[in-house]
Length: 253
Image 1 (cartoon, rainbow, N blue to C red):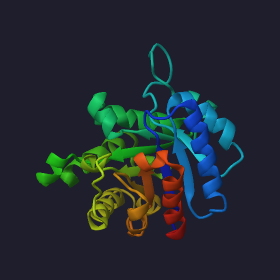
Image 2 (image 1 turned 120 degrees about the vertical axis):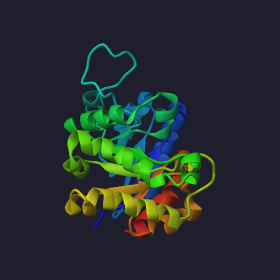
Image 3 (image 1 turned 90 degrees about the vertical axis):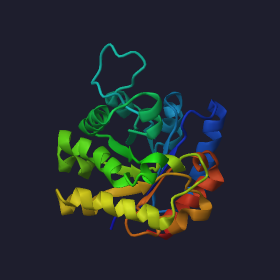
Image 4 (image 1 turned 45 degrees about the horizontal axis):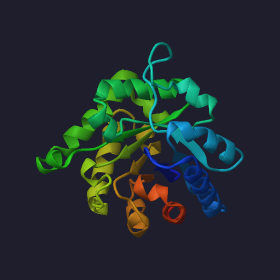
């Protein structure tokens, strides 16, 4: 049985005071939940707040990115070992915004995934198609390419150390959500893609849905057989909304 994971991606939002208030609200709201795993991914400057306020709680924390390099002259980058120093459990890699705005390629993202695993972090690999790609009937082709980059570099066992998040680009921050059936179809395809290499790895792999998941649709989405939680954007910035989604994960565990 795969344990549901609800991870909040705060993106480039919040002040120091906001971050502290949000962490307090989430901590209080999920107290007593035992079946769902909860994580928050604040901006880099606020990772110390997560470490200070969440150490000793059941809530994990992670980063929104990680360098594909070990260390060295890479101005502005943050290594996996540095994130580990701050107690991070997770590292998001390959988010569509980084693919779009930072020019990240599948090969670059696969190296980030590998760096995270090598340093004991759990990478959350984001995959997903644009609206144009979906309308062209290329959804499976695109997400397969995203998945295969890690398979080609690290082999199928790498997926026993990570998480996948299906985030249709056309649903991120738009308020438009894939229907539960649409999301389930892609999740099932992703799992089968991994199962072609190893059924055991595929059966254990958590695949999250991201793309305008909110309290009103979380239960139906997480209730699908191959959807194991959510990578939450906008709703992660409101403690009450995020906690409600965590409750949906708890109820569907």
